[in-house]
Amino acid sequence: MRGKWAQGIVPRGFCWIIKDHLAVCERPGGCGVSHRKVRRQEEIIWIRENDFDVVVSLLSSEHNLHNYDDLVVRWAHEPFGGAEEGIGRLLQVINRLATLTANGGRIIVHREELNETVCGLMAAYLLATKLVTTGPHAIGAIEQIMERPLGTPGRRIVDLIVQHLDENQDAE
Image 1 (cartoon, rainbow, N blue to C red):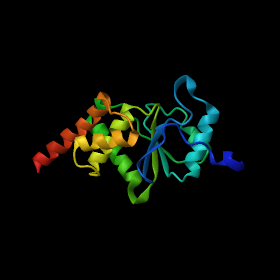
Image 2 (spheres, rainbow, N blue to C red):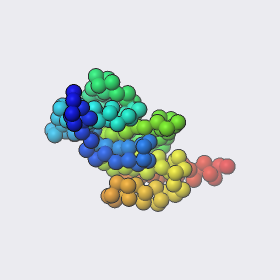
Image 3 (cartoon, one colour):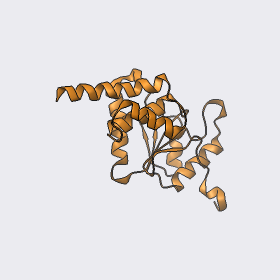
Image 4 (cartoon, one colour):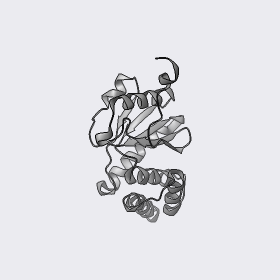
């Protein structure tokens, strides 16, 4: 490939949560009936050409993950459906993201859509990794970064981390 197409296209909803370390986007290629194979390929090329170390899929299935292999992009599958999965699963996902971003790693996280689950997870990540100090600060930061309010499903994810941190602080 040559020219501007060799660089791919920016995935929909792309946004840095932590500049040059942690980003989010919609699933490459789009979601549902609007999913396009060509767009998926172009977005994965963009991810590769912009030096992301790993793509983290939060989808429940491994559908289309082989496309990353085809384009020589490393991926990780960390299914996450929201607060109803509990604090244990939330901590597993946050710890995996923290491990992948350690030592300057650049990762991009996606789910079918860039929705409350992804935004809530990112707010919980900021709080769990002590980049912000309170639940309201985490929510405010994500709302500002994403330029949209965080609704109830996202706030429930943040509440899980707040409760977990409070319980662990009380135990100390």
